[in-house]
Image 1 (spheres, one colour):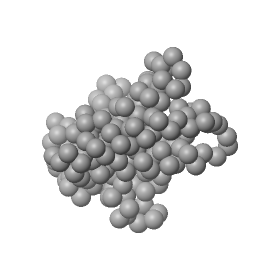
Image 2: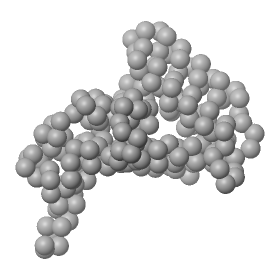
Image 3: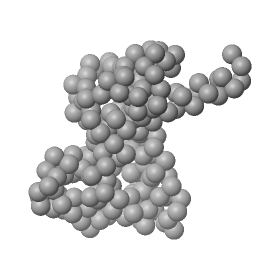
Length: 197
């Protein structure tokens, strides 16, 4: 295959993954069809199988892409902050915000896909990618909390559960004052209870 064609094929694959990651986070795994993803990427449905084995393969890779995007965001926050405490505060404020709540298609895949993943087979490709994303998220929370060790710290797991749970509940109650209160309560709790490494 000529070099230009390979580059174009990789560009198309990336466009499909980006479209799928946004659609799956916004609508859920079962709320998206392959033709919709391909149309969102500006491509025809016929080219799908040149890039992916199945819809399951696409969804798993889209989940991985969503996780990578959030990991990169946390890395950028850490790199821009003068210290871990400032990075942690910035991350918590952004994650537990109305802006993040209101943009699920561009937000955290861990929160957006939890329900879908819970209904998949234990050995599914999506579940494996999701578990890897959970571990990466918890590892980064370890770093932001200045905790270290060979295992993920339990405090990071509690933070992860509170972050994703608060985001899910605030999305489910959007339009009600309870939604804002959930975000604020979780944010205030995490910021007031700064873990000691």
